Length: 478
Ligand SMILES: Cc1cc2nc3c(=O)[nH]c(=O)nc-3n(C[C@H](O)[C@H](O)[C@H](O)COP(=O)(O)OP(=O)(O)OC[C@H]3O[C@@H](n4cnc5c(N)ncnc54)[C@H](O)[C@@H]3O)c2cc1C
Image (cartoon, rainbow, N blue to C red; front, side, top):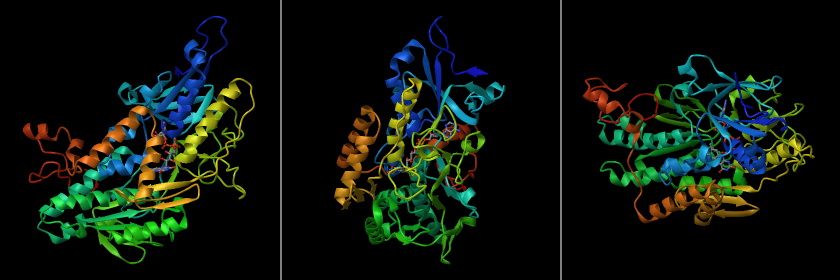
């Protein structure tokens, strides 16, 4: 068993130390730890407090930039923030919490080395728990989805999808079979929230541009379909701006289907509830999120949708020394007149909640009263591709270029660290001066393929005639 509080009582006579365990290194995890390390600087330096962050990745992902990363406007490294550099006073443990027994104040963690050690997962003890594992894609039992669907929540998925789209164009350009060409050039996105709409709009824009460099593909040969179960898209920007976004997408020949569901995507054919049928090698699933599976492996109270029951002070309801915020937490929205309303799972709330969360943890350690989290949603901005966007913020509605500019200015101001802001700005400036990148680097995912071939082997999943980097498997990944 590893004790997180291994600095406890380092100097005889000093008060007992407090160990704060932060589970998750996303918006909530990173910002909470960052604020705590500022507010508890002296305690951390003297060893009276320690902060341990458990995170599967050594970086925080700025998810609103994923569509731009997929379009190639921002390189993947600049969409993520290195936790070790930002959280200098915290201990970063790379791994995944698999269970939490809060009654015993222990977390079970599978680290990167766990499997190699063969000694089982690590047990970590703590005094205060910040639980922030966020959410995962909310999938439905649609036949074929688990095998062929592509998610859009991580930087790996965003870059994988970019490579995949360009690779489909390469396949379409070189095949002699019209059916393969048609399926390769058909892209189905399910879910009309900001993740799905921005991803589709940015990729369509990128692919439309890329098509100029193909001798036998015209932009209108590509078929883009957005499938949305409700009667609107982008609810975050309001009804009027949502309707504008539909008009803008349809004007680009994107087939927006409202009140429609994906019924099946088996055998590389997307079947929709309106009876239409699209042979395709690309089904991107962005139809909402559900709380991270870890929550079900804790003794903490959950609501009917699996989110942690929380108070407006961001404590876990009815439990001492446990705190939560972000996508995993059901926080009462005290600004709403609607009884039982919770704050929505988005970055706007997640970031603001961390301020109150960190202040409340410090207040509780010092025996001071706790504050309530109160923030009224101010609206949202969404990019619909280069120089195109839609926004509804603080009651102001913008569309087209001004909305796109606002989207960029807003997110540049929000992306963490000056370093990342400078790099993203430099990339945007350079991409304004030079032409867009149009290659697929899918072969990066098989770095040993060349050597294996040289050594007489065959690339996994590739036939002898398959060109370099050409993944013709069913996974849709490249
Ligand atoms: C493509 C996309 C675009 C978006 N755009 C916007 C936008 O424009 N505006 C907006 O307001 N919101 C946006 N969002 C939503 C926003 O990113 C989320 O609401 C926000 O990230 C929630 O923060 P969080 O800390 O709760 O979760 P996350 O930021 O997802 O962090 C959770 C972290 O916990 C880690 N974790 C999970 N399980 C475990 C475990 N068992 N042990 C340890 N760690 C674990 C995860 O790896 C992750 O690092 C977007 C989301 C996506 C996917």
